[in-house]
Structure formats: structure tokens, C-alpha cells
Length: 117
Image (cartoon, rainbow, N blue to C red; front, side):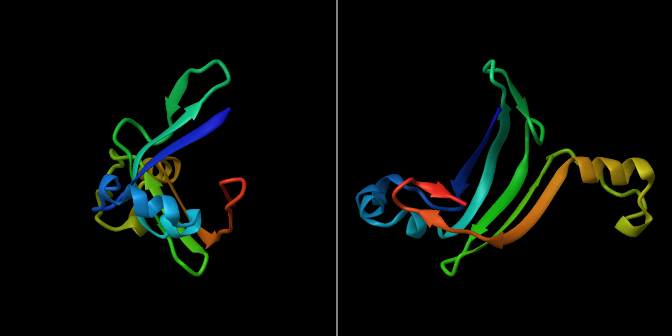
């Protein structure tokens, strides 16, 4: 299985600066804020499933010093009826946990292999 996540640069059109990007390192091109466009799980048979539904929302931030933060979630997560996450019902809590993910850490870039790890 392959995980395919499409991201778009927030407020940035890449076409006018394509010549500049080709001269920049991959790491330099990654640094910034990226918005989630879609997140699909592609199975070996080619079929897909949407990991965060048809209207996901999310953000991925890469810093120049090698740190990142990611938050992805379904676009249809329920609002807490009590307006307080600490007072969520079991159903609300389960929906939020199953429909979102957040993590952070450090990253490295292999310019030769074009791999981010």
C-alpha cells in the first residue's frame, strides 16, 4: 500500500518561480507552510480510500532548521455539544480521535534520492 498526500503551498503560486525552484535545493523548496489538499491510501490493486474523508483539512510546516509539525483532520469532525473538549461524549471523543492526527519532530532531506525522512 502507498500513502499519497497532496499538499499545496499556502498562498504561493509555483509557476512564476519555477526557474528559481529548479536551482534551489529540495530542502529549500520545502521550507514553509503547506495546506492539505487530499490524503489517499492507494492499495496494491490501485483502489483508493480517503483517509480523512472527501473534504480534509490540514497543515504541514517545515522550518529551515529541520523541524516540522503536521495536523490533519476530517472536514466533518463533530463539534463538542458542551463546547468543551474535556466534557466530550464517548462518541464525540472517538470521532475526533479517529478523524485526526497531529505530530511533530525533525526531518532530513536526501537531495540525491529526493527523500524526506
